[in-house]
Length: 225
Picture (cartoon, rainbow, N blue to C red):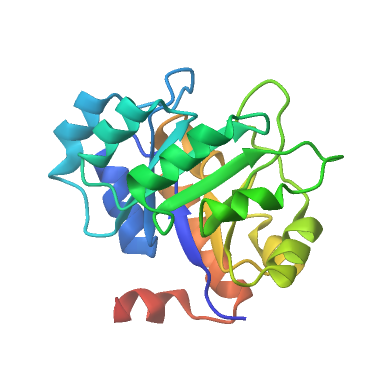
């Protein structure tokens, strides 16, 4: 199995972004959903933007209105990860796709375990993030999801990009790799000291264990970077 791409989400400090990128993160996620304890304001993001490393930046929000999405687009993000309930109006989905482009839109639908994945979403985006279902909110549960289902969807619809999220940490990343076989993983609470503040030790342990489970020497990998 090849090394999956890694997104470190819930970035709230520039120093955490720098460390994540140095360890191997390809994507950095910034949450703009106000109820989240990991939310950063637009002004706070602008303040840290000049200190961020040169890896892809992902704006994360929940069902944003078009005006907010336009504002996020103006901040220079590379990708836009949008969480939303399954009953989200089709017009909003089409608007998001048109505003940022289906190649830059990551859709993260809120799908209950008993519900089938909504294939109609394929018309709006090329990338889908599967997070652990939480009846009372969106993401950030710290609980793992259905890795077997993830693998099935990835295998059945290889034309789409699938991102595994939900409860990943240094202890379970090896099992997640074996069970889900993801090409991209998203880690957040599993590498935190507190919401929005990453733990250097947990971040390093996550990447070390990820590489170890792939049979890659982490010291050699970082030296080559």
